[in-house]
Length: 98
Image (cartoon, rainbow, N blue to C red; front, side):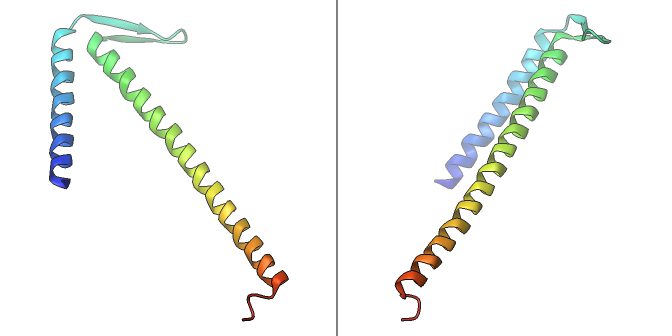
């Protein structure tokens, strides 16, 4: 089953690269990019679109990483709280000495 998943992942990656290549071959018209504060030199439309996609992916991965780190910190905090409460409950009932 693992080889099937790896194979499908590889096939999807190759397909994405091929689609990106075809996209860049079809969109060769050069346009400058005006970012209000500065104007970037003329590049093919495909470069600008793929660069925007890459920036979006990086921002999304960064945001997802921050959320995962925050969630793991919360889980760690809740586990410590649970352990303290269980220890206090065990002391109150005298179960830990048996």
